[in-house]
Length: 243
Length: 340
Image (cartoon, rainbow over all chains, first blue to last red; front, side, top):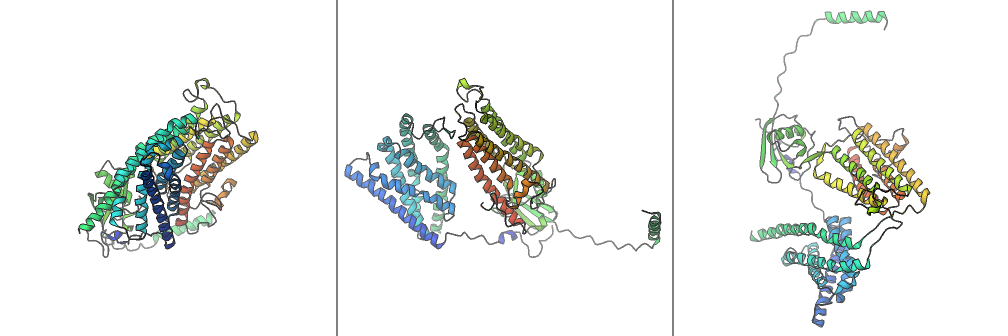
């Protein structure tokens, strides 16, 4: 076996400096900070509204009406997150973000808002509570990350609370959709039948059932993805602390 | 040639033969070949899989893959991905060992691409499915519509025309796959066949269900709309075929040499002056024609999704063309002239 040629080594190819990950520009960062602060404040308003209404009524039934408007406003405001990903100021996947945001917007408007009968269901309160806590933590996490001053407590909460909040939210969402099914079937809400000039039919009742079924393969994927993220982020921090 | 010339040629040859032979040169010293030592490492586990001693410097990546396949029969060359860096770019089969930025001891990171399948097989599966599925709905096989409509026929002539157009499109694609396309990449991952087929087959079923439905409503503007759409459809089909022929003539069989496609005498290829991927432009035009002809929302949805996908592919090809050819025409857009 001949000796290696002069000046070349086994690792010659790995000497190239790794590409620096470019973050958003100063203007984009400023905008994102404002957006995340506003969204954190918005979800705090919803949380305070829920607590105040509960203390005033002494019951958790029908609390939805006390936070209906801010919930619709700030949950719809999350649509901007898809735009942020599409434009590239946030490095997340457009498809994943779109799927998560649209599913929530869909539940807010196409189910809870459209089927008035489900608004009194306890399941609505279940997913609204889960969303509220999740979003307060998530948006504050983003805000502090952008400012490069992320407290460990928020980081820990972001990657720990989901263990309970995700299943809680999904349970609430599924129960709400299930509760809406008989009303949708009875009224034929959002359904289109043939014949029509667009040659297309749509059965909203079937669509809701398919939506519920889609949770079976999708929820575990999302949940275990978050578990892996938690392991990666928090274990890394623990190692760093013990050094 | 006249006789004088022949004589002169003959005498010239005689002179040549009678000339004294030059002294043979002393034999050249044999050039010492510097052999390479190639180490193949698992990209994930960093486990050493194989050490190849005395690999010739002129060996290609394909040769190394073949040697690796000998010791690991489960990983045939098409299934292997070799990189210089665990997260680097996949090396091409034609890359030569001595031209790579490595020393005489080279480490390659191996990752398994999974079971592979020939591109032709995928293309044919993609096309046979929609062809047969559409015909199942057209002939109204049992269990699709209400029992009273089993094997019945539509009273609207546009439905029969739509079936002919749809079938023509997919038959054309099958024939092009068999006789025209020159596919540079040999294989693709096996899982892609399920993804691609489900896309084409499900959309074909969805469209066919509504177009052949007993409650189908013919287009709003009647014959005029259908005929205009049919002309657009056929024009684009001929255009697409012309482009595929031009692209075929650009490549020699088995060659991987790339050339810039240019307009030919065929007027359908003149769009090459403005677009990098006119085959996609014509494909989009065909489906737009079919949408207008059938006035069916699922077809429109299929056209939009197809347009998005083709735009992504066209932009990728356009980027590659511009990277490979410095003199690439600046006027060209990826898929839509001057727009996109």
